[in-house]
Length: 320
Ligand code: TXA
Ligand code: MG
Image 1 (cartoon, helix red, strand yellow):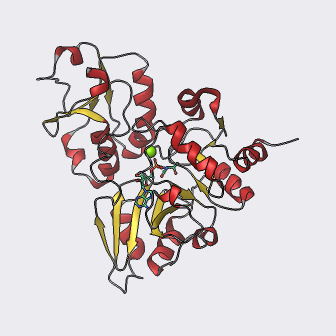
Image 2: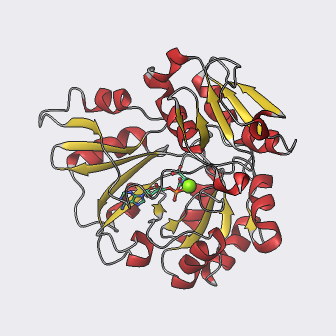
């Protein structure tokens, strides 16, 4: 009998894509050795070619086979956080096509902490390129049914249960003596500093930095169907009546681990009620709290109206 994983391998080897569970969010995977599969990711996600894909590996050995250098800092990060929600960006070698990296000479690598993903990658014997399995700029999927809703029957999805982390990996670039955090995630700046700790003889610094990828073009992201309003109280002052007429509320739970896990499924669940907006109520004190940083990052990108920042932006699709 063919197992689901064997079937997935056949599909990948034929140049098609597969929905893959990871501990962060579900990915839409293709073999890095098959250009048709890679092209299909961009096509069905409606993702622009300027946004590079990350490559998922099942071991450090597999990662080293894709880069020109494996600095000590990368080794320490991989030893401590892999398998896990950390993507490490390093100079790529010729085994990684420019289609995957959008012409950049670097590649993002991650070893996901999910038994199904690890088994699939191991069976394939090489890396799988996989972005989150959602249409470009939309909410990431945290269950297999989210992926099926997004792509209907077009895509085979491996079942892996609900994602434990719930938001995408921390993305870091490793350059000389600096670790640059391009995207905050479950692994925080402090977590990284802690593991560099006693080994940090080269005085490696850890800094938040803007991503080298098309800055400015990726401001809006993670958006559910209904426009999101961020507020610290339940007040919706100053907003157009069309927006506030039938709000759905999500009071974020006190525990950031739970909040991250629930975030995207709440977005999807509340959107189904066809509200005029989704009001996310988050206490002001959380915004300056490091453990909320990754969640706040996703919320601000998803929000059409950020009453916390007193900045209004437009959700053109809904307002048009
Ligand atoms: O948790 C995750 O990372 C999930 C699961 C499926 O592994 N994947 C994911 O992929 O979130 P995606 O494509 O939605 O986001 C990858 C991010 C993008 O923001 C992309 O710009 C950045 O990683 N990225 C990829 N390659 C890069 C590179 N060479 N340099 C800088 N940023 C890069
Ligand atoms: Mg994504």
